[in-house]
Length: 362
Ligand SMILES: Nc1ncnc2c1ncn2[C@@H]1O[C@H](COP(=O)(O)OP(=O)(O)OP(=O)(O)O)[C@@H](O)[C@H]1O
Image 1: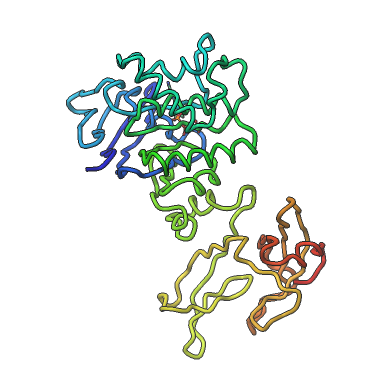
Image 2: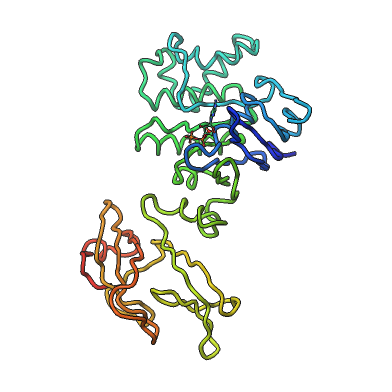
């Protein structure tokens, strides 16, 4: 049985289509992220699953039970879907102590007092906030409030946990800590988790699978590594690149010389290995900055270039090597040709990282 099955979900808000035919299956115990630029419909889909948003078309099933159907107008109550939602704003009750905030959901369920006490204690321990039990939300830091919100969501032991950008209000360091916390929770509780974010780093480091949204549609669903290595479209390739540094995009054509097939681009040419491409066809070549390796002397397969600009971000130096000539025998015209961005991490080359300067040869 699947944890969640979405079939051809359509939602319009104020007459504007916001979800345009979403199909998605999430397996039990999966940690899936919804990733995409602002306004592409991630939160709306999360609200559809939680039951906070009616659908105009399609069906939603949770743990094998249909909970929404656009044709029959079925819309199961959010409280009866077995899901728990944590919003971007923690929405803790300010007049209640941490212990009471966490206990609230169990009280609503009519659980016995002794059992509530035991469960709350256990969850506070899991979230490592036992010592905060008697404080009010106003006496907590952002990260601590976030943990309380998560404790409140998991105390009812939901089969499915929905997290809507839960880390966006935290500073960089707390984000890393909370990410680890969510990963640990997922491992320990084996809950199905959907995590909404527009931060690709968060999506790539947290999830088993990522669903990439653009304009109300899911354009690719894949494990992070596959998404990174085999993006389905140029748009995804660009979105999943290094923040702030665009992918190098080259137009190329297949050519054949002495039985060897090459992909010729204005900057350089690539030998086609492991198969054949159709002859004399045009291709778009994507080169990730991190796949361009800098060497301080030619090695027979390298392209001679001059580094015209570098940007240092601390752990990495980005370089724009300008290629003077193609390494083919047929240079087309003189001068500079192309500026592929590349970057080096200290893992690859400490020396280059430290000594790289504009005008260094690479
Ligand atoms: N109540 C509403 N009425 C009309 N339009 C809405 C409403 N809520 C959301 N929208 C629109 O629906 C689209 C999708 O919104 P949604 O919040 O799902 O996007 P998102 O991908 O989660 O964005 P973000 O990352 O910024 O939170 C947006 O264009 C938004 O303006």
